[in-house]
Image (cartoon, rainbow, N blue to C red):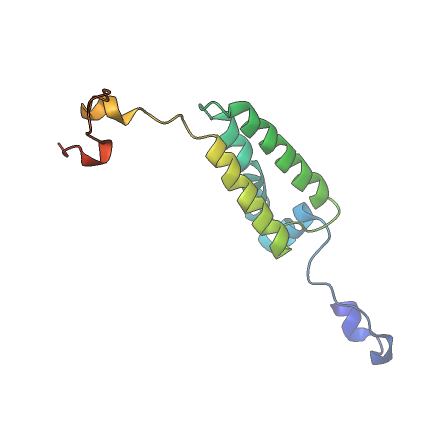
Length: 130
């Protein structure tokens, strides 16, 4: 910005609003808190995938490793979190990893006392609320 202000107007010097490195961009705009926030955002899918208990644990872990490695490596040469489309893609992929990481569903018919027998017409939705 400073160089563009001092150049002659006929040169049409481009003005860049971000650095082309995520770590440097977060460091300049947010200081040490910005760098910590960057790594917290980046590592959140990994933490969620490694805490997973469900049957899709390995898929969540693989997805998290690929997502985080891809965004970190791409962030070394471009601002990935400064581009809206890439930020939304990261958020959607993180939500998919969180979905894969959820624990398996419980069998609610045992918890409410509804017995599923061939002659029974009682559905779980019709069961009385205790």
